[in-house]
Amino acid sequence: MPQNPPELKQLLASWSKAFTDSLPPFSAFSTQTRVDVSSISGNATELQELAGHEMQLYRSWGRNGRVSGYPAERNFPNDHDDVLDVSNNITPQAMPERGVFGLPHNYFFSSQIPSVKVDIAPKEASRNRRASPLLIHIHRFPNGSHCLVQLLLPATFLPEGEKIEFKPKPGRAVDIPFTQTQINWDTLHQYLDRFSQRERVL
Image 1 (cartoon, rainbow, N blue to C red):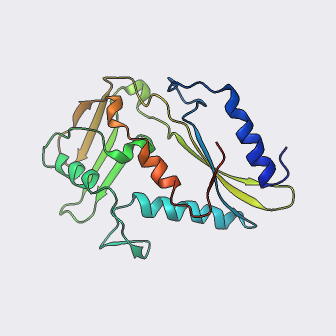
Image 2 (cartoon, helix red, strand yellow; image 1 turned 90 degrees about the horizontal axis):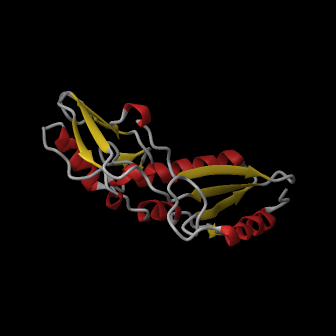
């Protein structure tokens, strides 16, 4: 059991010797895996709030130009505009970029009158979810200190040709075929790069 952050980093780095170079067909370690120690603190709540703050600022469109009191970054304008178009019976060309965080991926447009909700998920009833490839863990050491560990597991996101359904309320549901080219892993790497104290250990 690692007793401190350096020992944890050493343990994680040692795992890479047995990894495959190819993209796994399901969530598993490979040479494309990334593990970051994003921050270290004596306070676990502080780390939890840091992860939530960065996630929200990075992903959210915001309301009236603000996200939880901070200026909205609006990093994904195409996601916002393309999904809103679905409510006007315009079929999208691809899954939203932020879908790489996992599905379902839902939208609520409170600025529209009436308000619009769009749910996005795999259409196949037996697998209408896709777990996030990003895992976030706050690790506590025996001395009471904590670190924020974030794990990215790139893998085949969905079967090729799987139908992705967009269900606007109000509006008519549409679906599009999924292709692996719709997944941009850099979207998740850019989120991980936001942490100024980060250290990539794998």
